[in-house]
Length: 269
Image (tube, rainbow, N blue to C red; front, side, top):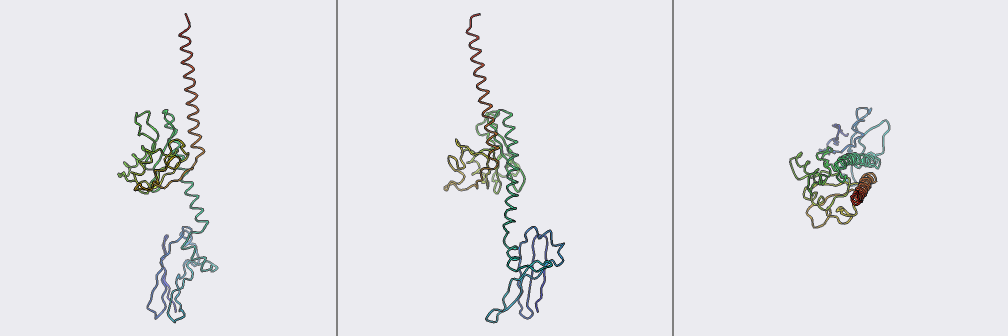
């Protein structure tokens, strides 16, 4: 006779099975995928024993994994156990889709901050620092308005995040920026111990996250930063290209106006 007991909560299951007279009790703690957590209250037979004690060839009792969750029809043991211990491909795809959505959401916020920089006559680059799913730091280029060569979007976001978290070490945080970081900003990320950087457009002139160099993964540096590129890359690139195109047109118009003014001054009255 096998005695079975089970305790379950929305996030874990503890199942115990013991064979009478064996004196052995084998617990199993199994992490449940999210979809089971919301189904348990609706299942007609919510939980079955996860361990069944049998005997091996030498007559010794041994545990055998049977099946954990029950439906109206009994599933295959291997399929059910696999779903309890390893995420399925559909679950991985769903998780990747959620992460991709979050990345794009935070990158769009960075683009909004870049638009603020553009309104101030700055190069439109914006950045946000995210920690545990919430934005803790925001920044946009202010080098011209603040007369500060270090006032890049990434630096401003790192500074604000440090104040919010009361710690300059931003371990496990992620920085989203519309343009690949320059060497200065990449160095600041290494010093801040930030976990990951996600950027949109590549910077083929000063990019230090893979374009001209990679300071974030330099093997002799004491901290490496994970890198993900290409999130909303076309939109970030278009934002920058539109800014520089307009600025070139403005400079051309200013130059033409100066030439006309000089020509008018040279004409005899």
